[in-house]
Image: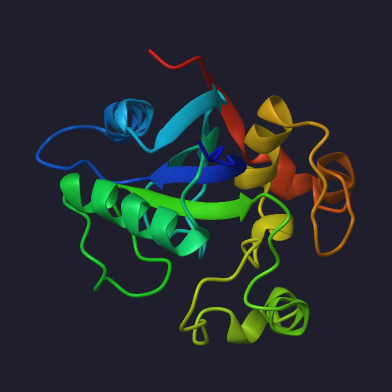
Length: 196
């Protein structure tokens, strides 16, 4: 019998709008439960929930964010499709525009040591000029997520559950990426506590 190889994946969760009157904290809690119940996923760790300002500034209510670690035998594209199905189950439609307010967003942040689609393309998107980040986005899955190293609302919860993780393309640790962030951006991300 062939052994199934599992890979560790990290998924960022976020939302800042209620769905059918259900607040974002409850939506994220439900999304974590669906990830835990999925037969193709093994939930390993869940960070605390954090509040973070909407981006761009004053474009909506604060977000609730978290990061989960899970093990899966799914290939990255198949895992992303599974995440999109979970989002859709919470009413997510993908026609709101880049960085639009939403009830639930599940971002595949990293999976194993994958650098997709290739190191040069991933680096080009990772180094995309800030003024182009809202208007330009890739037409395929990029891993690690090209904005991971720029986002306190991703790095702070990731540091809770995977402090030893290293970015496979840059070799930087979570602590190094956090240290490179603007102190004001870090201070704006506040823990909400444990999952209810």
